Length: 393
Image (cartoon, rainbow, N blue to C red; front, side, top):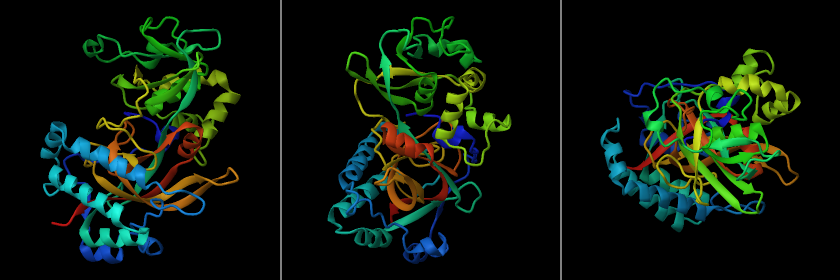
């Protein structure tokens, strides 16, 4: 989705790795079998125990969604793009063929296993675990969340719908650098009255912050005024690094980094709308969109991303489309509407990236579409572990 947010935009730090140094550490079989030394002792026995596949009395399982996500990765791994990418991958024992065979075998195990415990035992028996070195060479990984917003919009500008999303200019590849900044392209107020992009408007939204968040997430579903639904996706972006608006607010002592979340930031701008013109232009990076004609949100490897089964990592470092295991705290909505943090083990597919997701210590977790997914993504920000799983050689 080429998104830029996750909670990093709210003030969490960026960790950069050395692209010339392998960032995955192979765990010896004994460490996997007993999971000692790999994770804190209270989490050791749960490593690889993904109970969401089968679900429980309160929540249905998502086995079919996991299988479909695996199939998306397998489709990518058959492409010439995947073959070329893996030829230059830093770890010679992680090849496109081994990743593909690992996914095929894991798929069989998901279908044949009768419980999370049975799958966990088979995976520990047959697979090698490669742990991300993380941000501190001790496996510490910051997890944030992203989602696909659903907003109301109009194909024509009106007094209510005033904030545009723009198409990628036809001559964008010939633009000289440095590129125009955000304020040059949409105006300080976001209305684009004197925009260099005049005439390239794709659609208009009612709320300036909503339009900004679509740029941050990289895609959206839009409920149009004529009753139809439009989907938009990333088409390109200007050549500027991402600037965290949350960090800018904290730097100016408008908000504290402690307790910073997307809802907190949105609430601040609702109470102080004039501040949008002060802070949004500080993120000079600008994103362009295209009509995706109802197709689901796609990751950087051009396959659909799956809620709770797709992650985004730094693709200059991590193996695209590979099977991974995350162990961290993630938020879930309870029956009474509250958000509750739970320790999870989740098998996922590495299918996306983002301009704010840099280094071996960063993972962005795809929550899905709509308000509930947005509520979850907005309060995701925890430390955990990231593993890649490949069949033993």
